[in-house]
Length: 312
Image 1 (tube, rainbow, N blue to C red):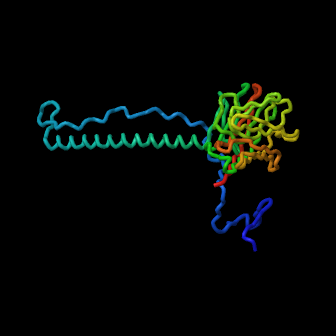
Image 2 (spheres, rainbow, N blue to C red):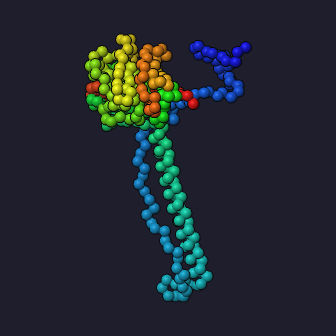
Image 3 (tube, rainbow, N blue to C red):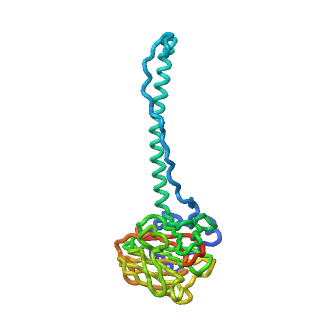
């Protein structure tokens, strides 16, 4: 019997195998796999850290004091010494509290930095991202050219490691809108921009290295395209007329890049295009999803999940 099992389609657990532990031994995949399901997402943008500090200075040690009835004196030497000890103990406690406070500020700053690295959102003006049923909901403000975008993790998915990104999403309407789903080399773009735009038959890019799917209704025939840019040289191939999203219906798009920078594109699990030398092999990428208004009408997209793979 051979020592390798090859599966051409999928493995399905049924019956008891679907309701009990179904893998024995140490599962040890030779891939890095990250899945962003957004179930634990704090969708509000991180607020600015509260500007605060302990204003009162730590007092100097209590003076020796005196005894007797003179102003400021103590009635007895014993009471004087007890009071001085108490004051100095309070001073020591205040010093320790101040050190703890500074350490707490450093910890909060570290947590805020980690939150930012997990997800990066760019919201034009009053565009919003909220937690929805089965994903995050990106809503553009009802103004022309406004965007709402989300990137996941950091810019560290490498073509030289056979990186793949898959996104599942839906959008409310498919008129007067642009959608990009794929890899890009930046966590966000400037106001009004996605990594790519397509007007009539002219593609523009703001990314230097990127690849993915683009729908832009400003194009003469508004079907999905596969787009790429390698070191600032962009190209696109329009897919056939069946490759349009259905309003309010989930769509799964996958972009897979091999070690030579070639890209394969999958629509609901079916390969629909291939581009040779699509991106530079040495430029790290990030999963990028975004929508853009092409008129002053708001759009709503639900991003169900983002999944990424690459060689370990």
